[in-house]
Image (cartoon, rainbow, N blue to C red; front, side, top):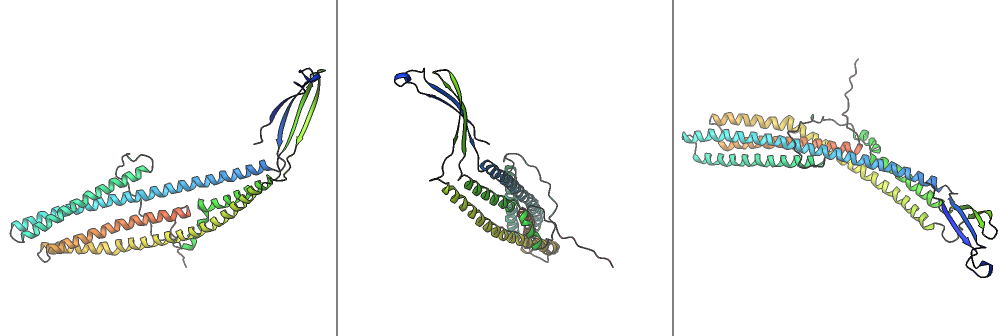
Amino acid sequence: MWPNPELIGEAENFGGTGDQENFETAEYTVSLAQPIDVSGKIRRRATAADYERRMSGWDYETTRLDLITSTRKAFADLVAAQRKVDLTNELARLADSLAAAVDARVQAGKVSPVEGTRIAVVRSAARAEALRAEQELSTARAALSALWGDASSPIGWAEEDSSPEAGLPPSETLETLLAGAPEAARWSDEIALREAEFDLARATTFPDVTASFGARRFAENDDYAFVAGLSIPLPVFDRNQGAIAAATSRRTETERRRAAFLARQRADFRAAYDAVRRAEISVRSLDGRIIPAAQSVFSATTVGYQAGKFSLIDLLDAQRTLFEAQVQGVEARSELTKALADLERLIARPVEAPQSSNTGG
């Protein structure tokens, strides 16, 4: 905006001696003074303000993406907690069923009472794990609801998202998308802002000229006359050297901070990409090999125990192995979801798995 004009009122030649003792020979002047931008400072300030507005837009987009990522990860924790509740409840039901079977065999004298004590301990441990899983679920619900400002807001049973698809594009393909992230795009505007501030500091070397125009009344004969003036500050001592030096330093600092950010961004991308790869391998290994094998061993051991071929310890060990493998599967899938959220946060868009191309002859 242009600086405001200034209204100036003056009275001269009064309160002296002789003819100037009273106001009969006084002169009254009323004028308006307006500073005039002669070096384009207003335009340069507007340019700098526009870059600040654009940077605020990038900051908003950064905050929005951070919130989305936090919500996705909190939701993944909630889904994992729900699955663990299901698993621990199932474990508790199996422990109850097995305890009833063992008690019957103890009563029939087929096994030692020690096995009854052992299964009672396992049953109590299973119930404790189920209770702990319920508490973790309550914590996960509170963490998710806190993201919309009300940790006391009730959350029901969350509908699970579709499982993240395995398969990532090559890292080189995704790395080219880093430039589109709001933090990266913001640097171009910040550097342009520092350039605009530097130009403004140099333009301020030439101070504004103040032009004034008004009317003067002569009380002696009631005559009127116009007056005009022009005020030009002389930049002899203060030529805005300090502001120019500061703007130069800020420009250099911004360029170096940008270089540091780009290096850190690439390192974060590599870490996030590798985390998704590791999580994919873990999920495939658990779902495709470890959990089915543990399920098969548990089923075979259960049948063998009922036939008297395996001991209770063998059965409990197979059951615990299956439960731990299932929990690891839940955690691995949750880690995959969260790692994918971090990776997509860095590139500011969803990761699309590579499409397989079918070529016909």
